[in-house]
Image (tube, rainbow, N blue to C red; front, side, top):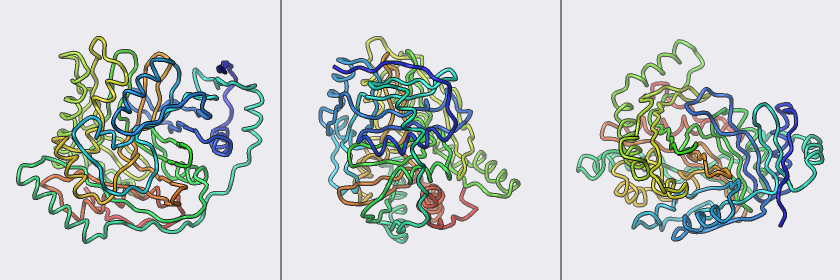
Length: 436
C-alpha cells in the first residue's frame, strides 16, 4: 500500500496556493483546498492547505453514512477530507427529501489523500507519495488562468413576489406557535456547458476574504466557497461552534459603515435570532459534552467581512468519555444556524416551502486529523457546479422570525449573494443600505 512521506520546506509566496488549486483541479478528481484569509477569529481559522488524489475514499447516501465514515476513519486513522450534505438530516431524524436538486454530490464523501500540502509553524509541509520537490516545481510552473469576465447571469428559482409571500406564510407558522425561527433559502442557477471552477474560485477569493473559504472537487461536482462560519471544531476533548445569526451590509463610506455595524449590534431582532440559535447549539453540544461543561464564550460578537458585518457567538463544551468524533458531529448535524428552532419542525417546513433540495449547501466541508481532531465549516456563500447537468448554482437565505419584514429579508439575500455575483463577472443587484 502506498503511504505518504513527510517533508518540510520554506513557505512559498502567496501565488503558490493559487497555482496549487489550478494544478490540483487539472490532475485530480478529489481536491479540497482550505483557503482561509488572515482573520483574528475565535479559536483560529481553517488550516491553510490543499489535499488531492485519493488513496482511499468513502461515499454514502443518508441511511448509514455516518457509520460508513466512522468505520473508515477508525480503520485508518489519517487525514481525511470531504463533506457532509444537508440531507444527512434524514439519517438523524424521521425526515425525507423529495424536492429536485441541481447538485450531484453524495450525501457524504471523504478521501484519504495522496498529496497533502499545508502550512505549519512557518513552513510548507508536504506529505506525498511522490517526490515533493517535483510537486513544488510542477505547481510553481503552473500558469494562472485569466479570471472570468462575464458569465451568464444566474436566475432565481423563486420570483421575488413568491419569496415575499412565503415569508408571510412562515411568519404565520411562527404566530401559530409551530416554530420560533426558520432559515428560509432560495436558489439561483444557470446552465453553462463548460466551466473551470478553479477560475471561479480565484475570482471569488478576490472579492470575498473569509476565515473558512474552500475549493472542493468530488469527481464531476465542484464547490467554490467563501464561508465566514465554523460549524464545529474539535481540538483535543473540546468542541467549539460559532453560530452566525445577524447580518448588516458594508458601506464604502466609513461613517455609514460604522452606523450599520452599530445598528446590527443594537438590533433587538438580530440579537433575538442569535440567542435562539445559541440556545439550540448549546442543546446540540450537550448531546455529546459533559454536564456543566457547555459555555457561551462570546455572545453577539461583531465581525466584519468584505460584503457584510456578522453577529457571531462562540459556544464550547468538553466531550463525554467514549464519544467519538463522528458521533459528536452526527449529534450536532445539521447546524442550528441553517435550520432554526425547534429543529425538527423547522426542517419539515424547509422541505415544504423551499422548492429545491439544499444538497451540499447548509452542509459542511472540512477534515479529520490522524489523532481524531476535526474542523468543519458551514457551507454558505458558495457556488456549485454539476458537470453532469451543466448547472451552476448558489443558494442564499436568512432567518425568519415573527418580526421579519419580508422586503428586508429579500434584501439580506442580495447582500449575501454579492461576492458570488461579482466572481461570475455580473453586476450585483444592489441591496438597500437600510438592511438591518
